[in-house]
Image 1 (spheres, rainbow, N blue to C red):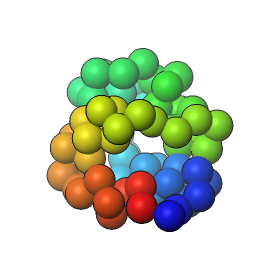
Image 2 (cartoon, one colour):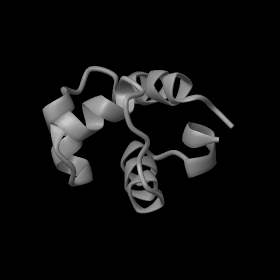
Image 3 (cartoon, rainbow, N blue to C red):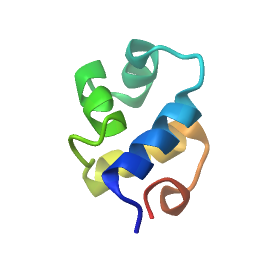
Image 4 (cartoon, rainbow, N blue to C red):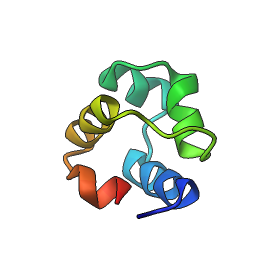
Length: 65
């Protein structure tokens, strides 16, 4: 299982040139929540993991496990 920091690095890489606000709005979460996932302060619940993976076109396992 990846650490929160590793997950955060993956999320930042996937976001690319999009702003936190753009990505978060498309996912349906606040930009502060996305920021907390990217910095490793918080981990998303399973339902949010699925939304994030869908938005980035990735598998949940590739991002979070």
